Length: 127
Image (cartoon, rainbow, N blue to C red):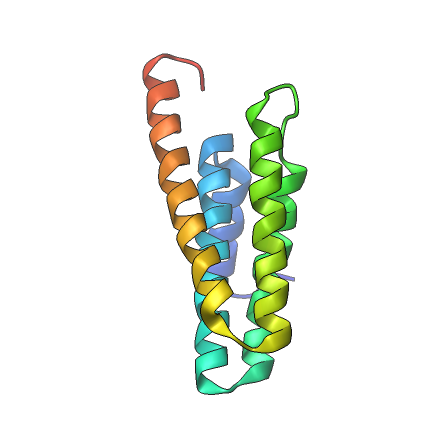
């Protein structure tokens, strides 16, 4: 159940967003959770680390489920997402932030790539 005005706002944002905007929102969430997981590891707050790294994994699973395999690049993205999942799991199991930091960088790069792609496709009228 949604209680706060902010939660209602977030729900409205997600329900009315375009596909490219939703994708960017997923990346934003994953990046935020990975950073919170890293923070948990560095603080030795392993519950915080586990909770946030698991949330990041759930978002990466959502990114995988959103792939359209009609496009060859989806296979490459699948391999990247699966690699990120392995890194997040390793980071969580071993409570070592190195792999999680690598995932955060990959997510940031992919997010920027999707932002540029959405700009290009909106200019060409493909969105």
